[in-house]
Image (cartoon, rainbow, N blue to C red; front, side, top):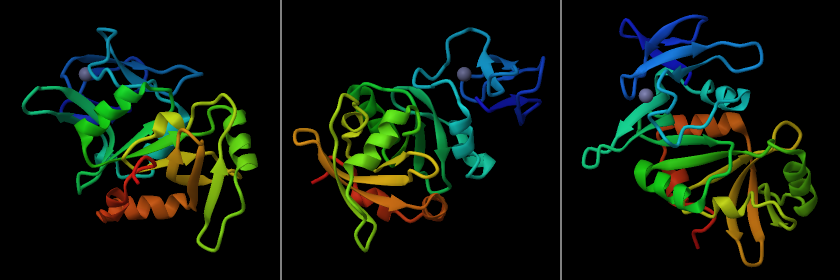
Length: 220
Ligand SMILES: [Zn+2]
């Protein structure tokens, strides 16, 4: 985690500090090494949010595009007391999850049910194959920036995000930030639209709900 509580204030990890997890109130220890993103880790080893994944520069870069008070917001289901930490939760209660690692479709669904109003931003720069493949498998953008693509090969990048919530894949500089409008896992054909990260941040921050209403790649 980027933030923990020290004397009631949200602070970032610094060498040798101990603090309190804002979600579970457990003790967290600063992990500050040369080759890692400085972060807070629970002293009890297990993270209180089972969905939490270890943070990379990519996660931090994305979170930092939003105000700090919207980053890492604990959310509890009042009925079940299930607890998770939203990567970003805007003032209008829109949750944005930055996802790097593979997760099972059941967990994709569980997270969507929990957060309700949410958007996925997926790390498409994890390996070079995915972003180069996507460049090769897509057509040229039409006047609106929309492309058709035909995904083949072994990568499950798209299948994992066959959801009813909006999915954006960040393939990195030179490869683009794409919203996946449609994807059919049988034919492996889909539609995507090239987006600008700054426009995405502005729109999600503005409280407009249009993005959510349109739905995800599995919406027909
Ligand atoms: Zn915790």
